[in-house]
Image (cartoon, rainbow, N blue to C red; front, side, top):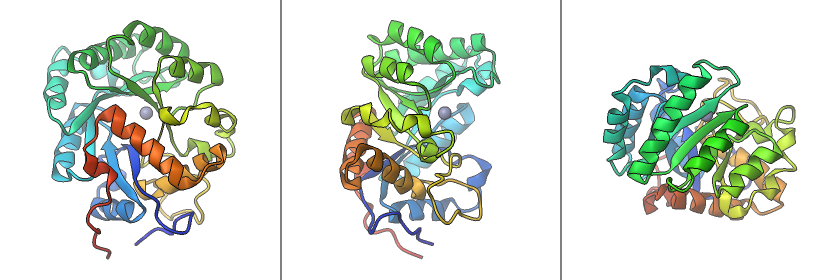
Length: 286
Ligand SMILES: [Zn+2]
């Protein structure tokens, strides 16, 4: 049941800032997934809200595990075409709850354009407005849209409290644009991929330690440095230590140090309860 870690013993605190537990991949064994995460040193997880229904379910689950989970509320750029005039009110209601700590997942994805760029920009600006209004930070998704994203964020930066650009996979100029705006950068198992993640390797150490967070984006992006590969091709928070290990190698720092600063950054941006940085009173091992 317990995963064998890439280092000798569990390192904590570890905060996984992006998990998607309402994907069908987790329909059958979520309790075990939560337990395995804790045994792997994960002390806190942020449930990503990608549409209204998932944002509501995420908040409900977070409230059932107040020492382990928080949630976000938003509409993903893929679902931006679903934005209606009632969406803001629904999200506002969720964001009024302390366990719902950020607006998003929102942003721009010009890679696949499941919603049109115009629909994506409309939904994104509406959610930027919610962030400005509520004072809560943003959980941002950007793929192949760095130039437009930076233009929009520059006009909003003074109105919002902060943001993380999650699963950063872009180029140096985009990264430095985000850092110039004092935003946080989320790094996933993409950085463990020796094929498509290699351009990130020289960039990583130029992200200041007080700007970096780590995440699995479960169930996607299974780290390729994980050996042996699990039978189910599914990522889960218990594999966050492989992202941690890769990031620590690139910074040439001990894993413990990277665990500490990435967790502290998450705590600071999302104003997380202290419990999300503490191991739960010994989870029961099966
Ligand atoms: Zn995303």
